[in-house]
Length: 496
Image (cartoon, rainbow, N blue to C red):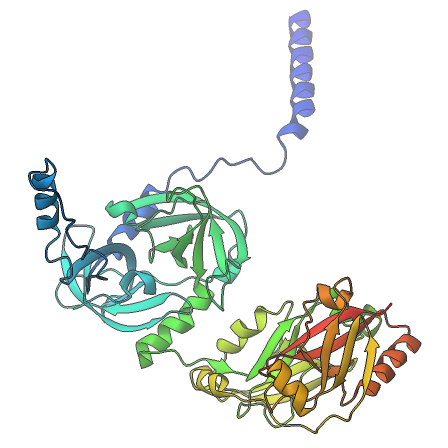
């Protein structure tokens, strides 16, 4: 018994040691291969996701009206051409075009359905198809091309409806599991699962691009459908894919719910969007522009970053001098502007008429100003009709610097280069093709209006400003350039 007990004790000790030795290998979070099942989640959401079918009457473009060729008498091809052109008769008559997409119900009591604008754009007839085969006609309450969102309404009393709610897309993380439900290639009620691959994607589809990227399978027909988190809340509206073949390759994009919610509410309430508007033209702050503006870490301001004001819209909210060309907006209403594209989106999400604190960097000094926002939809009309303000005439002189030759902007040069009367400054007459100015696309006929945020009226002003920058140890000169028609832009040119 003693020997047996000793053996058992030794065996137990060995097993304990083995357990301890492998324990560190299994410690920590398990490497999940995905959710065990989304069947229960999908079952509870399918009735809230709908298919959108539209029809549109379009006119023929006239290209089909090709005259029948003249054939020799008794040609063996006569019968073939007779049949072919007989089928094409009436090709200039209007015809019906149909399309398919997806959508989802967000208000069962009011019958509110959300989809993409491009799904219903131009449609004469919109029909909502349910998972159980039912159908209802829909009317368009409002649409927004800038974010590709449309709001539809169906008869809430015609049948029981089940709604889903928007979640908070700002809380979603890269790597979180998501589920898409939609109508790919007309196959309604299709469920796919993946993860959030990236956030804040800009795919150059509109001014407010801020997409969630997912590898959940999204195909043609999924447009307008929901992207759910694992709590069954809509954190995105599926809207675009990247694919050379037209099918899913695991790169799909969804409008984040944080952006969509405000647009949906405005479309429901007003039938249109009412976005905030600052009334400025902006461009990115590059490394050399940041250096030229003195935006360095020693001042506590990170550069590059922010949005550089290149112009102010006449008649706009800040046409009172509170914002000036050359200002860099680094914070808007408490939100940092990390890059130029952040500003239009944040401003647009702000209420019209709101008083907002804006932090700017002006001539190397950080300050906070207060502005009252206008309405973007009104501002777009002003911007299209804007003409630059008149300035003072430039004195006569000619000089060469920064790889450019420039001179007085007199009437002869205005006529020669086609420069409008509203543009003032110093005209560029020649650019060295091997210079930094040529690399920045400065060309003869451009007009220099400012250097280092100081107005220049003569070539001597330019020489003086360049000399001052050299004395300050600056490596780049920041120029405000006006086109022949008055469009402004900033460029930085290396000081040799």
